[in-house]
Image (cartoon, rainbow, N blue to C red):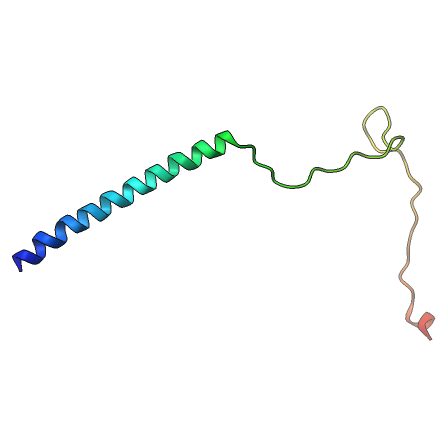
Amino acid sequence: MGMVIVISLPLILFSILLGFGCYFFGRAKGRQEAYATAQVVGVPTPTPPPGTVDLQGYGSPTPQTTVFKPHDSDNV
C-alpha cells in the first residue's frame, strides 16, 4: 500500500503541475497572437455607386416600388 502512494502521489502532483503550466503557457501565447494579428471578421461592405449618397451622408431618395405577390387565381 505504501508503494502505491509513493508512486501515484508524485505522478498526480506532476500531472497537476503540467496541466497548470500548459494552461498558463497557452493563455500567454494566445494573447500574444491576438495582439500581433488583426482579427478579420468578414468581408467589408462594398462602397455605394457614385451619385447614390448625398452630402449629408444619407442615401438619396429612391422611388418606392411596391411588389405584390400574385394571387392564386392568376395561376389558373
